[in-house]
Image 1 (cartoon, rainbow, N blue to C red):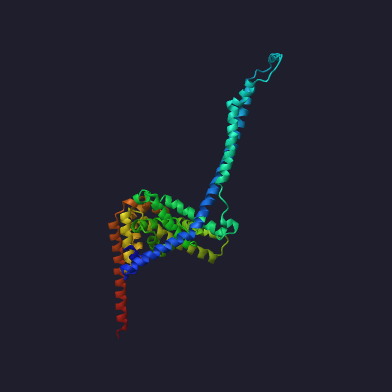
Image 2: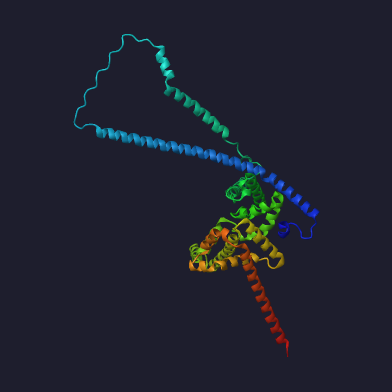
Length: 400
């Protein structure tokens, strides 16, 4: 039912229509794979070149360190020898050299001894190996990418994709490996492909840490890559506004949440006018509220996967039944559950977020959702009473 709840399948669609939508989603997914596939090859080749260059730089640094260590050791030995030499005593003259032989014939044994010397042979082998290593390194170097040769893809596009791909790879490799489903590398590859497709279509947003946490449960339940991508796109229409969209916003949001006065001081130091400082501070405080809402909701969702499914389905169903903001009531329910502990320990936003992450698998999802429903009912009753009072007031005003 998730494609229905997320709005990908219309509620009044037939099974045939839903199957057709699924097939179209899979075809679109495969088309996107073919679009960013060549760019992915360029990114991987560039990464290989960087690895090779990094190895060369490391090798040279190690050689320099070894040379410096050898020179230092040689200097120490020389000093020790000088300290051990007796002072003010004349060393005895060395013995005279032995007389030269009466005749000298070049012996084949002498020549053989030179060629059979293990040290000389080792030197010859080392020279040969150096030649092979050089050839091997040249063969490993990848050809220049089309972007650098005036190909289809611009250097700016390659740079943007590379940055996003690296963030995706970092999150995919550490995504819920304790879950049996993601212990299979094939499923991790599916997760990466779906996420790359989404980011390729939304490069202006890019990849933000946490996207994989929203995608992973969808893939586990739906399994089909095209359908998972389509449902993830529907989910992100609701969720993406809660994510900071760039590094500057991330830094400002964090600073504003931790110390609003520090944000004001920084704006004043930058030479902003009074009205401009006020505008910037309000903007940062708004971002802080969004970040706080996201942090609380993320904590609510970072629980066991069966509980995640229950919480998600309840939130999505509430959109059609009661409120599109039910996730806020879930967050408030979480705060109420542990408010005494939070207040006693005087926790700030960062402390609260870490606390809920540590408590991720200890929440009782059923009790949490019931508390959230109760909070929503209280709000509805309060609004109804307010409307009733207002209605009665208007009636009394109309009486002569």
